Figure (cartoon, one colour):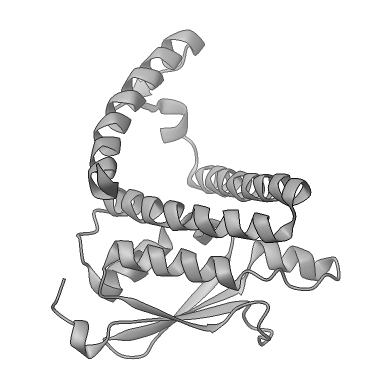
Length: 213
């Protein structure tokens, strides 16, 4: 079937599955829906909605850690990192596909599309980052506050060496947004880094690639 067709089928199945499940749950638990969304969520103050999203994102990250440690304690750090990197190769394209659908980002949207997509990533709700343009064909992305690395720093631990996972994560995410985009790692643990960021990545479109997609 291939990834592209699988994502297309997922989109069709998800919409129908969501309707079926939400309508059944609303009847069982006695809550009202508006356009298949719980009214309680729609009427929730914006600040509470934001905190809910942050909590869901934190749970996602915690679950990632639980799975990592399950493999690490069973098979060791090497296998845990290998599994982690492999999972990012699948999750990053899925996250990019989901964001494109939600935010109506067109295919092959270039660096501007990528910058928009980065705002909608799960990490964007729990980490702090900054983007610096280098002109129309490149920008750098700095992770200024990373929930995982900051927690380790507070405990007096060394940085978690996430460069291999980040390389997979950002390359696959960028490629899913636009195959012309290339990624360069400026620095990521175990690399030494300045206090103002934990990792830094450069996204660019080579002159030879412009207009190909």
